[in-house]
Length: 173
Figure 1 (cartoon, rainbow, N blue to C red):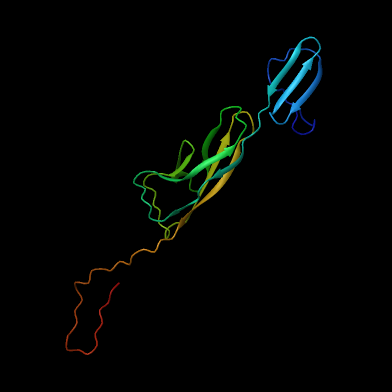
Figure 2 (figure 1 turned 90 degrees about the vertical axis):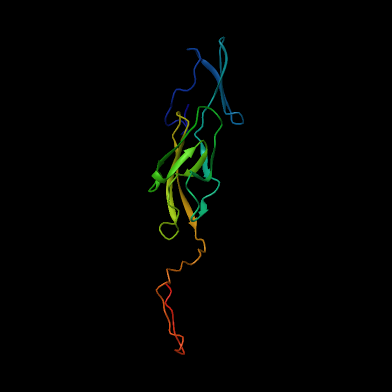
């Protein structure tokens, strides 16, 4: 089989006897290569294609989302014709240690701090491979959205003011 118009050829499929092929055709709809031989029969083999269109259903979460347990970022999907067994993995990214895969779900690991003011973007690289073709690799950016947090008031027990002074101020931090 050649994928570059005959520049390079790779053996593909099994079961075709060592004989002269009289006709060969490719059915693009079913992704099948059919070869007919003189006196030996017709042989068909499915051609494996590399997975394509690696995507993530969601790429943002609000800050301060609890990570006591792993929290789902989104569903990972890709397109493939179904030949071979696909393996999905986290293969890189500056923040890869903060993520885990569970089936086709991308999750933040338990205990990951999700604070917009500390870090609001996370990079993770995912790879899908069927073990027979070149792997598909894509880096995703996961965003934290800023949440309007309630202000915190420090202890004001040490504040005092004189009631006889026409103006007084209390410092709150």
